[in-house]
Image 1: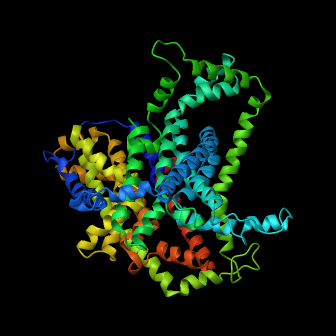
Image 2: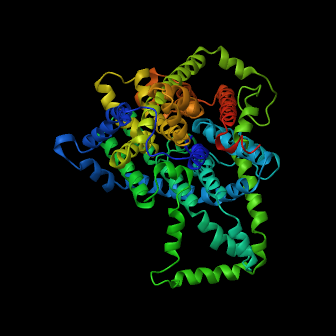
Image 3: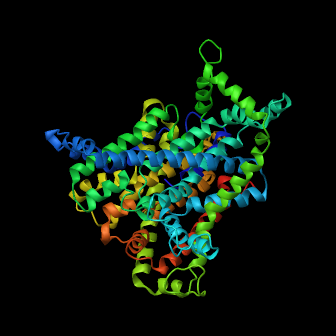
Amino acid sequence: MQQMTHLTAWKRDAACAPRTSRFVGFGSFRSEWLLLPALLFLVAFYAYPVAKLLWTSIDGAALSPRHYLRFFQDSAYTYVLVRTLIVSVVVTFFCLVLGLPVAFLLARIEGRLRTVLLLLVLVPYLTSFLVRSYAWIVVLDDNGIVNSLLVGLGVTSKPIKLVYNWIGVYIGMIQIMLPFMILPLYNNILAIDWRIDRAAKSMGAGPFRRFVLVFLPLCASGIRSGCLLVFLLSLGFYITPAVLGGLSDVTLAMLIETQVTQLVNWGFAGAAAMILLIATFGTYLLLGRGVRLDAMFSGTSDRGANHFNQLTSSGSGEKPVHTRVLYSAVGMFDRTPLAGAMKPTAYAVATFVLLALFLPSALVTIMAFNSGDVLRFPPPGYSFRWFQNYLQTESWIDATLLSLRLAALTALFGTLLGMLAAFGVSRARGMVRAFTLSIMLSPLIVPPIVLGVALYQPLAQIGLIGTETAVVIGHLIGALPYVLIIVSAGLQSVDPSLQRAASSMGASAFRTFWKVTLPLIRPSIFVSALFAFIHSFDDLVITIMVGGIRVETLPLKMWSDIRNSIDPTIAAVSAILIGLVILWVALLALFGVGGLKRAD
């Protein structure tokens, strides 16, 4: 899910392209049948496992609600649920407050400066959650950079506890979730017609009045999409709370993992997983009505502005009381000196956030060259010692090669299945299209811990648990939506007159596809394969649940070492992975994704 918001530029390009009601290139062949491979795969390894998990949670044919009753009758478990909801709300709120100035700044500047600042968002965005969580250990630990500076400057006499507690959880989650808020907002703000703002200014509206009554309604759909996305991701977040939190900072995802891996209580784990799944889909259905999953990631829906207008108007056309109070308060604040400081303050906040997004990863890269036996700031010296240790340790190299192999397989099969599905979706209509998209895109918001728990029993029944095949199957479920959305956007941008011209000149359906369509969508296919590769290469939760210790990928190797001991080799591996992310961004820029190429 990590890579999803970065696809919005492809959707903008496709929106400007000619549309066709039926995709040309398969002749009389019913291309809707191309949906079958992906649908059958998802029914077998996604829909059926989730249904079986529900069956397990009610003790099968006994239809017993005892696990659910136990969950809600035990205050310890309800506290975990409430705490998860509170953490998600707090993270969403701060991501909105901090992300809005950044999105505004990115949308208002142009040229190479926008490219540079976008990189400060995209590099952390594509960096794995595990690496970024580990970066905060390096920064916030007792021997970390922050405490070393505080003690060195005399601010405190001893280190402050900033990690392995709720402080570390909130700092880590907010920083990790910020790109998921910034990119939908940025995409939405780019589409704003700023002549409206200038017109309001010419009519005497001050900066605060224009912000509340003009700017916020115009980017309401981006705000709605970003908040919904961050909240849903936070509900099922596992890695950062587990790495940066203490024993009392348990989230619902962590509770589920404990019930499975330590207590082997499948009935109760299934009930907890279904509660998390219901909370996720319930939130989406309640707050995301009318917002398609792909539109939610782009922030391009127009429902947000309509929703804002409904809140600030009444059926009779007269402004309701709360709206008149809002307008009055806005007018009073607009006349204060603070209103004039809004823009400089927003730019200052945006600068701080951009630095906070990028600096932890940059500092980890610097600390990777530490010559000491432990990570300490400032390092006693600099060397390639830990990089050499990584290259000379067989377990690290084996884990790296395994991750590359699994990611390549996921990219290959994910691209094939997703590309076929995209061709089928391009022609499907009505209920077939709606059903297909709902099934294929829903894994985007399903918490990985729920998917991992659901997959375990069906895969165990056919003897695949602890195998590379099981891991690839799990990764494919998450990779398919990326491929479907990217390739579909590429197909929408194809001018159908080119295909019709080739057909009118006697080209067969296959030749039209091979010579006309495929070259036009080749960049989309490459980028979709890259996103599928990144998704698999960075995955941890699915690998833990269905691969276990017998399939030790690079993220799993890092996870084990982080939990057992903070070996400086992890910093070297993190630096290498950050370098790979920069390579991913360079490849994406080569194909003009995310405005990187167009911003030059």
